[in-house]
Length: 327
Ligand code: AKB
Image (cartoon, rainbow, N blue to C red; front, side, top):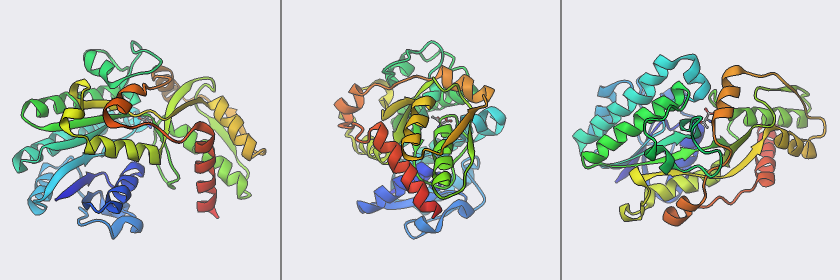
């Protein structure tokens, strides 16, 4: 039996594959092959070239070739800023892509699908503190205030239909993910990664000034990639009877901080770190719409998940990992 990971070469996909492989799972990893780094090639059974989730026949072929897939992760989706820049293409990947995956699963009689939703699904009406995935399922008509959030909502609707048709969908609401990969997509919370990379550059002798694209007092939830991976695996592994949240959605909390707090902590390690404020309208609007914190109770109660990496440790880990990569 194997786990199919679509969008395997992204920062989350790579970690997930590593974690699945280390506990002995067989993996079918799919991404556009040139983006699949050497470091994970040896772990994958299959790399699909050129085509992506937008092509139904590619999805169908994967299930035909790999008959023992029992679980699917669909991680293929652009981030918030990419979606704002090109909403049509984003919609094709996020919504049509998920529709293709679900059709192919339905044909192949594969039931379990996991999807990564985002804090971008919460709009102006949502509470600021302790946000839950339940709030999203209980307010299906609310406007998240961006194409990004609306597309995620569209996927949740598809998952609900899949559930009604006998499937086993599960989804996690992700905060900003902090990691030490060298590349990442254009999102809003990615400002924090850019700041940490700028600081790591300073440590390796390349002095730059970071342009902060959001108001420095806006608080956003973030998570260290190892905590996230644990939370995602707990969601995958949970027995169906454990999943008590409506529609099987769980927000995965980590820590929350403002840009101001981040810069202060960075300066503790890198006194030469410099920044100025250059607001990006899209990013700042999204950052203001999204919650400050995520609830910790539901994932702990049903998945046994709680974050283990605090703010200071997280900043240190990511900073040092980027510095080591640059050296
Ligand atoms: C983004 O900012 O677009 C993502 C997200 C939290 O959805 N990192």
